Each structure stands twice: as C-alpha cells, then as structure tokens.
Length: 247
Length: 271
Ligand SMILES: Nc1ncnc2c1ncn2[C@@H]1O[C@H](COP(=O)(O)OP(=O)(O)OP(=O)(O)O)[C@@H](O)[C@H]1O
Ligand SMILES: [Mg+2]
Image (tube, rainbow over all chains, first blue to last red; front, top):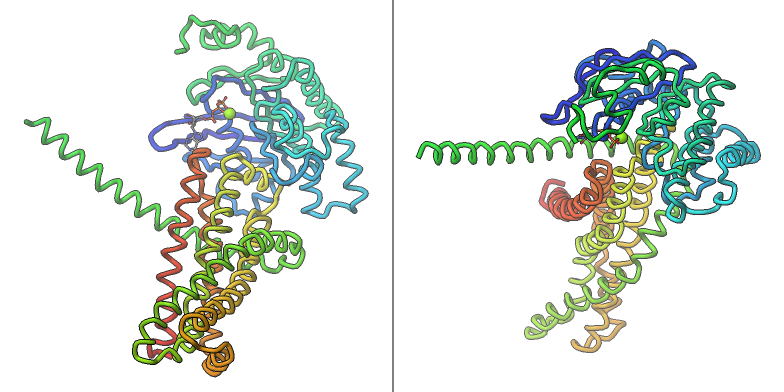
C-alpha cells in the first residue's frame, strides 16, 4: 500500500504540491491525470523517494520513505520499478545490457538465467530485433519500451509509470495498456500511472485522480470521472479550449 | 526620487543575496565533494569487481591523452632548458641545466603538467558524461535499480585517475628531461652522456615520492571535483556545459593551491 499523507512541496517560491493525499491499495491501478506542469512527475518522485516533501509523509507498506537513509531507501526501492518519462537508458549500454543491468549488478542469477529473463521481457515488449542496438540508435517510443522492460525485469510489486504511452502509436499504446492490466491481474502488481492519455486512463484505471495546480481536485472510478460535474475536470477530459482552466 | 532610492536599495539587496547564494552554493558543493571522496573510499572494496570499468576508464583518460601528454612534456622540457640554458651559458654554467631539469620536472612540472592535461581530457569528459546522465534521469534510474552511482560511476573513475595520473607523470618527467637533453645537445653543446650522468647524480628519492604523492592527490582532486560537478548538474544541456566549465576551472585552481601547500609541507622547512 502506498500512502501519501498531506504532502506539500515548494521549489524556490513556486508551490508545486499543496497538501496532496492519496491512498493506493495493493493490486490497484491508480491513474493521475493533469496538465503539463501540474506536478504529476513530482508526486511519482516523492513516492520513489527522490524528493522529500516539505510537509507530510510518504509511506510504502507502512514504512516511511521520506527522510529514510540511503540504505533503507535502497531496500524500499527493491520492490519498485520506475518508468521514467524519457526512458533514462544508460547510453553506453545496448538495449539488452540496459534491461539486464539490475540483474547483473545485483548478481541475481547466472549469465544463462539472466539472458533468459531479459529475452522474455524483450519479447513481451516486441523489442527482440533491437536487442543489440544502442539507445542513441532507437526511436523515442522504443526507448520508452526498453525503459519499461528494465522497470519490470526484477518483477517489482509496485510500478510507477511516468507517461507510459506518450510517444507511442495507438496500437503500441493499447499493447502497453494490456501489459499493465495483465501484470495487475496475474502478478497483483500495484501501479501508479501518470498520463495525459484519457483513453488509456479509462482502460486501465481502477481509480483516477486529477491534479490541478498542485492539488487533487477530483478522485474516483473512471465512471465517476466521466460523469464529473467539476468544470475543471470536464474541460480537461473533453479537451476543450473554453472553460475555467487557463490555456 | 523615492523610486530611485527604492530601486537602488533593492539592487543592493539583490547583490548581497546573490553573493550569499553563491557562497552557500560553494560551501554546499565543497561538502558534497568531500562526502563523495569519503564514499568512494568506502566503495573501494568493490574495486576488484569493477576492474573492467576501471580499465576502460584508464584507457579513456590515459591512452587517449598520451599524444598530447607527449607533446606537452617534450616541448615543455625543451622550452624550460632553452630559457635557462641561454641565460646560464652566458656565465659558462650550462652544465647546471640537466640538474635543473630533473629537479624541476620531478618536484613540480611532471605532476603539474600531467594534471593540467588530464583535467582538460578526462576531468571535462567525466563532468560532461555524468552531468548528461544526471539531467536525463539516468542517475535516478540507477538509484531506482538500487545501484549506487558512487560505486557504479564515481569510484571507477577516481581509481582509474589515481592510477593513470602518477603513471603519466613519470612518463612526462622522463620525456621532459629528454627534451632538455635534445636542447642541451643542439644549442648548449652538452653531450648526451654528460647530460645523462648529471641527471642521474641529481635524482633524489624524496623528490620522486613527493612528486608522485602530488600526482596522486591531484588525481583525487580532479576526478572528484569533476564527478561532483556532474552529479550536481541541473537544467538540461545548459547545465552540463556549466558543470564541465566549472569543473575544469576549479580543478586548475585546486591543483595550484593544494600543490603549493604540499610543496611547502615537504620543502618549506616543516618536515
Ligand atoms: N527539481 C526541480 N527543481 C525546480 N523545479 C522543479 C523541479 N522539478 C519540477 N519542478 C517544477 O515543478 C512543476 C511541476 O513539474 P512536474 O514535472 O511534476 O510536472 P508534470 O505534471 O510531470 O508535467 P509534464 O506533464 O509536462 O511532465 C513545474 O513547474 C516544474 O518547473
Ligand atoms: Mg512529468
């Protein structure tokens, strides 16, 4: 279970998160939507322990992430995977070595075993052909899929996705959505997904929260969000130019 | 009038606060660098398992800078001996040139020249490489995989520099002294044999180990400052450029300052 309790965060004078609280149950797929710059990535980074909030706490299975020492953070992160917005591949390792990196560095298996796991993940994300390519030689969407393969290679219990489907074609997006659903169904993975893509949000979410100017303004099931009467939410999910949101 | 005074005031406030900010940043940065060095020494126990990476870094910093190192050492030695030789020859003292050369190269110029070259070559590369990783979330990705960036990135770079800088500075000393020999032969009328004997007579063990100690300290300074700048890079490509520039400048300054203190520690009458 991920508990975010009343966190606030400021960068300089800008308040990026203002008293945000979320509770994400085990096995749930929780989607965070909101405009660019609303603070979505910042929430994920708090959950992963890269930022400590100015106020409030972040708890992973009851253990406090903020303020924990680097050893404790390392332990907590062992059960997490993070898909970064840009993929964040190590640029001097090829695709296969990138995916294998967490296994190799922690010596989780022999070379043969690691190869087998990596091949399986690459096949899952249709990356077999790119296995020997360098990150600079593949497209943005492929980088994202490699990043995803790397995030799931240690079979984490919690996966944090930062815009998993941006930069992917509709078919690939549907495929990633299916993968997220399948990991939830078969492995009971808890997912926190940040996205702009409403179609994908409706497909995968158990619950959706909308972030606006650093606060959660609405949180509910996809159907509740679809039927929301909040003008901000309506404008966002319908993608209208007119409404209360400044554009 | 009031407005002007108020603007003036806020300018002064702004000036002080920006000076203060810079100072705070410097203190924070120095602390960060010291902690980084400390952490690197803790991670040294993994040096053997990271030997491939260390050798790769040694190749990058050492072998690739070999040509430049050779030219700088050779011509540095030639310039030094030419200047001193021409003056000394007026007094018939050109025999002193070999003694001068080995002393200057061993005590000071060997490690100093090499440090300058390696700062430009691998210090800058380290800051740029790690800085790029920082701004493209790769360092975060490492931490997310529970991989310690100090163990994975910083320690191999510092260790490789600690091996390559002393090695290259011995090479620089030899080549610099050789450059002096060439000038002495062609311009000052000393035979190679004479030169060699005089050099051999004036090699002191103390000069050698102080020189090597210096190059070892320089290695730690350059690599840790460069890695620290890389790790603290912010704001995209612009920040990477800034980190690289600052790491080169501060490495030069620290090499000069610390170099002076080591010299004064060993030759200033304290020891
Ligand atoms: N490390 C940082 N230092 C300073 N400001 C930051 C930092 N990280 C984020 N911000 C600021 O916080 C705000 C929210 O950023 P965040 O990355 O969370 O947005 P986002 O919702 O993920 O947007 P996008 O959809 O474009 O990725 C932005 O205004 C950004 O400039
Ligand atoms: Mg974002």
